[in-house]
Structure formats: C-alpha cells, structure tokens
Image 1 (cartoon, one colour):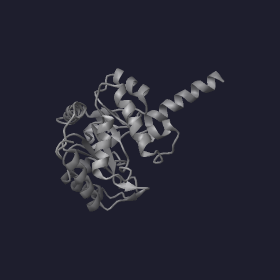
Image 2 (cartoon, rainbow, N blue to C red):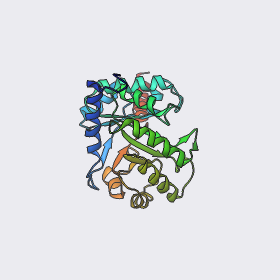
Image 3 (cartoon, rainbow, N blue to C red):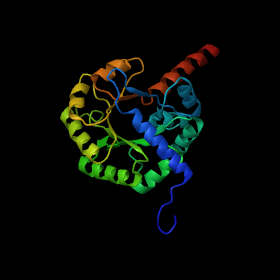
Image 4 (cartoon, rainbow, N blue to C red):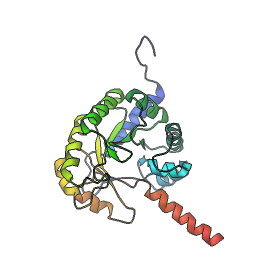
Amino acid sequence: MIGGTHTVGRAETFTAGRAETFRALHQRRLPEDPLILPGPWDAASARVFVDAGFPALATPSAGIAASLGYEDGATPADEMFAAVARIVRAVDVPVSADVEDGYGLAPKELVERLLETGAVGCNLEDSHQDVLKDPARHSDWLAEVRAVAGDGLFLNARIDTFACGVADPDRAVERAALYVAAGADCVYPIGAPADVLPLLRSGIEGPVNVYAEPDGLSAREWGERGATRITYGPRLQRAAAAALREIAERLR
C-alpha cells in the first residue's frame, strides 16, 4: 500500500489474467458444447483432471470438506482457503473456488483471501444453514464483492431456491435478475430439474451453471436445455471414494 493506493503485485496481475481467460471460456458456447468444470478436492485429483484435458476447474466445498474430515458446511474458513491454495498451486489452469456463503467475511476480506489463494472465481450461495437469504440484501452484498474484486474474480451466484424447497422457477429467475444486476458473471440455480432449465434459461441473462450427475444427462443434453457450464459438486469425490472402498474390500 503506497500513499493509500493499492499497488497490484505480479501475482495478483497473473491471477487477473487467468480470470479473464476463465471468463472467456463461458462466452459464445454452443448448445452442444457447454463448459465442463470438474471439481477437485485435493492437489492429486486436480492434476488428474488437468491431465485429462480440462481447461479449468471448480472446487466443491463439500468435496474438500470430506477430504479434510469435515461434514459439508463445517470446514473452517482458514482450512478451506488453504485447501484451495494447494489445488491452485498444483495445476496450470484457472481454478474457481466454492466458498459457500462467504463465511461471514466482509467483501474486502473475502476478495483478498480468494486472491491470495490464486483462485480466479468463486461460488457464493444465497442461503445459510438451509435458509434462503433476503435476495435484495444478498444482491447488495454481491455488488460490494464485485466492486472490490473488479474484473479480478469471476462471480458465480448460486441460487438455492430449489435446494431449499421452493419449486417455483419464477423465484429463481427473480433472484437471478438481481444477482446479474449486482455484477454476477454467472448464476447457478442448484438443484433445478432438467425439465425446468429451458424455462430458467429463457428468463435469465448471461451464463447458467447446472449441477449434474456424472452418469446422468450428457453434457450435450444439458447444453441443449440451456446450460452454459456444468459442475458436479462433491459427486466426483464421492465416486472416487466409492471406487477406493471397493478396492479396500478386495484387499481385505
């Protein structure tokens, strides 16, 4: 900090460049070619996904929680940021981080801690302990995060209406409009049924993230319904744990 003005360091400039690369991956996607972002839970799994040819990754908070021995939602913020940093250091592609609902951090501290990890983006959910937040207040908070981050972070605004039992798609569309206006780069109506996605797509501006099953609809099928990008949350970590369990049983 020189004379009260923030001086951008080399590492931060590098991260900002990767954020632009990551943002570009979401643009001009064809319906049959949505962006697929696997969710690494540690450095080893991140390297597996990069070696398979994926251009970017998106960490799942629940997958990292499991790898650290916590229940979903119980990972201390310090441990989550440290885990994200280890994943970022292990690969040479952009990494976005799921940081739940921001751990109660003020926008400035949240952005600083994300940039310190080297992450290029983040998921920010609009519920806390399965209770939806007031959308207007949440959009104001997202706008503060955007103002602090500038273009240095890709903001994926998670919409938890379906996850919290609100099945009316109009409620998700209303929240999406507020979050996009606040500066979100993408919205993520987690748990939205596949047959509802075209309706959401018609009412939402900008990229839409869907939560998929690895052995469910194909990427093309999701894309044709309106998905811009596909993530799998902790499902890849759970599949890997199940495979390891089978190996362990055979060894025993």
